[in-house]
Amino acid sequence: MVKHVVLIEDEPNIIEAISFLLRQDGWQVTTHSQGDGALEAVREAAPDLVILDVMLPGRSGFEVLQELRQDPGLGNLPVLMLTAKGQARDREAAERYGASRYMTKPFSNSEMLAVVRELVA
Amino acid sequence: MTTHLTGLRIRERRKALGLRQSELARICGISPSYLNLIEHGKRPVAGKLLLDISSALKVDVARLSDGTDSGLVRRLGLAAQGNPGAELEQVDEFIGRFPGWAQLIARMQTRIDQLEQTIEALGDRLSQDPHLTETIHEILSSVTAIHSTASILVQTPAMETGQQRRFQTNIHQESARLSDLSRSLAGFFDRLSEEEAGHALPLDELDAFLARHDYHFPTLEAGQAAGQADVDALIGEAPELTSRAGRLLARDFLERYVAGANKMPLAAFLENAAAVAFDPVRLAREYDVDFSDICRRLAFLPTGAGVPAFGLILCDGTGAILLRKPLSGFSMPRYSPACALWPLYQAISRPHLSVSAVLETPEKQEFLAIAESRYIDLDTPQAAVPVQRACMLFRRFDSGLPEASVALPRIPVGPSCRICPRSGCGARREPSIHAPLA
Image 1: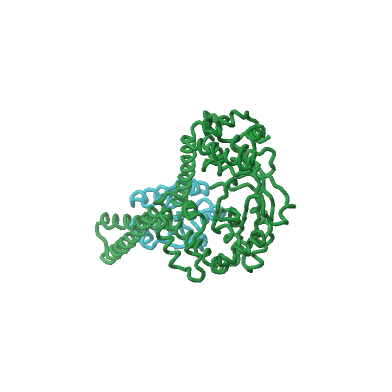
Image 2 (image 1 turned 90 degrees about the vertical axis):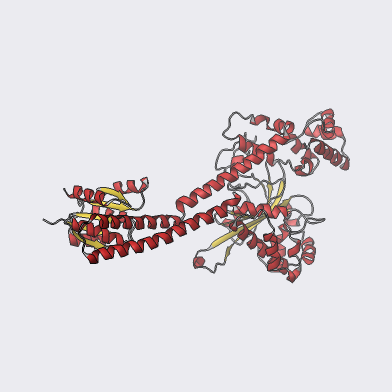
């Protein structure tokens, strides 16, 4: 069965690269490029995994994650956080809000694929 | 160093007052022969004894000590903080016996304070500058896109030509963005190093600039003829204005100075001021200008016969200092917030009402202070938020004061808590580094 991922990210060229990689790897990819409406997009897609960028226009990735975790239907969904800030503060925030994994940009493609496979295994 | 001069001045001043050596010695609690040695420069004099002598001679301690003022004790106290080995109780003796070393330590302490401030400012700048944070974030995003896309191009064996072409275009776009970003980042650090070259805070530069001009600018007193060119000349030739921020502060100050000088021409102003005992409230009414404009005018008059020496401090509603003119005998902290009992801060809580008091320093010197604050008009998007500016003018409480000042309340104040020796003060924020004053 085809696994479904929702990618929430605002950089168009990163969206294109990640989408290509995941599709190559056999994923169905839905993208959303801002914080606003992210929760609705996830709810509608009902995916197996969410890849969530921290710095988003509108609401931040942390706010979206918090809402996801409080939602009864989506509370247990695996979420991979992406951020361009590798600081301890952000990592702590990601853990506190309940991210399944945390990855700093720039990342290697193979690392990213390994992590998403692991998260839905 | 200054021992000989100080002794000489004590002797001259004592004789001018018609005071006998034995009388002065008794008042100060020392033997006449010891005073004699001091007057002849055979014994050093400093610290509390010098303060006692100056107060007995009704003269400012700085006039006796040739610049080695009472602030020296304080600055040495600050230097001793956190160094328990320093014999703080013998600070007077130390200053007396090693005046050169004492000055050196005080100057180094001031320098350390300045450098700490600079480091803190630079640290804030690097961790909180929104432009820098944003630029770094964009660089990382761009690098991520390039790295990921380039890997795909290299590692995907047979890619459809349209897709391949799109990825190449993306890399091209991102590399252009990256070169703009790196240029902007390099520019940021260039500006940073240029601005901080002087290692001093902008307000310190302004202080040094004003002090070098003795707080008066004759070239700006030419009536309507004074203008932009004179301001430019003063700023252009100022070695202490090393940063752009410092030059901006100086320009702002000098432009207000010119406006004040044009509105209140010097000769007439001196006459009018003398007629009302240099009372800023009456002068503000007479000239129909802001209280702070009058205070600036009074504080930056030429020193001369009949013109009292004024000190001035301007701050905003947060208490941040905007401008200061020191007055010997009245300590103003350079960086930490000042004594909460100063009328300056009461004025902030009572806008548009003037607050006057006679301030008594821990060294028992008295100053007449008058403060007022007002909301300023902003022609910026922040105009809806009321912003306050407060101003306090002060002078020695001696002769030639406005009549009303005699009945004013007397307030025992300090410079700022850390270096204030008073005990039992309800306004204290933190313990003093000095033994409390009984």
